[in-house]
Image 1 (cartoon, one colour):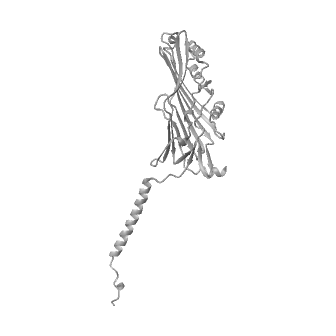
Image 2 (cartoon, one colour):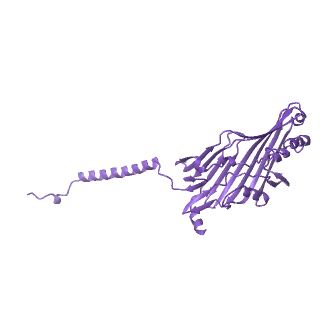
Image 3 (tube, helix red, strand yellow):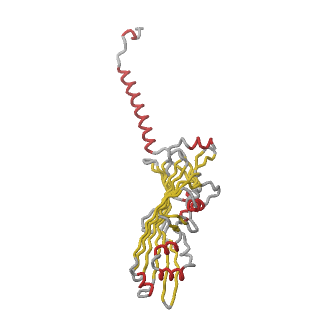
Length: 321
């Protein structure tokens, strides 16, 4: 292990950004920042979830929800406990070497209702620092990213501002948003409490689970950055419906992920690993090398020309025959 450390630490810092870009409101962002010098990874996951509950106008539920407006903002830091353990457990890895050291969490969600629709927008920002990402294989440094497409499959209960909050499940978000609207919340629990939507996790980046080697790779020599891009076409929608007395109700969750990996430095993808490699020569490098050779050649020609023009000493003149 000591030999591996010696080979990793002297490398220049390598930043790897894994992004699910957010051109739309419903998109989520995952950023993984790798540093081989400290052998740690900073994982920033911003989960943006839109939950929509539709109901008939002039229904009893409509009367309760058409003027709903609420918002919650919470944040805290953790160096251990069940939340950290649940996050680490979600980094499913064959070698089981990924370890979460600490994390910070910011939770921001709002609910807004009108005569036919209740919309809950939830943003959960989890930033964690993990170790065990790097390894040396046959003298080559590799960054293992197989764990990046993680999902927290159950409740993730955290102590935030002196009370427990589940920052993950859709149902918990609905309950927290409507905590002061007992009738509407009771109806939702009765209609959708057992549905797949109600029990869906919002910390879910499994859409990014295709191997990095299948993503589109580009290397920008000007910025010394390698990028791997993967677009997930279309939206993923999970919905459930409920009918009562001829009235129709729906509950849905929408996501819209797109993935990009950018590496500061040159790297090749092998499956879900990034292999650090020397940067290839660019046309600019070739041009610069050619220009240097041309300058040297011109200087040599000039030297020989002026030397040939220089008068020769009289003592060196050839003897007459």
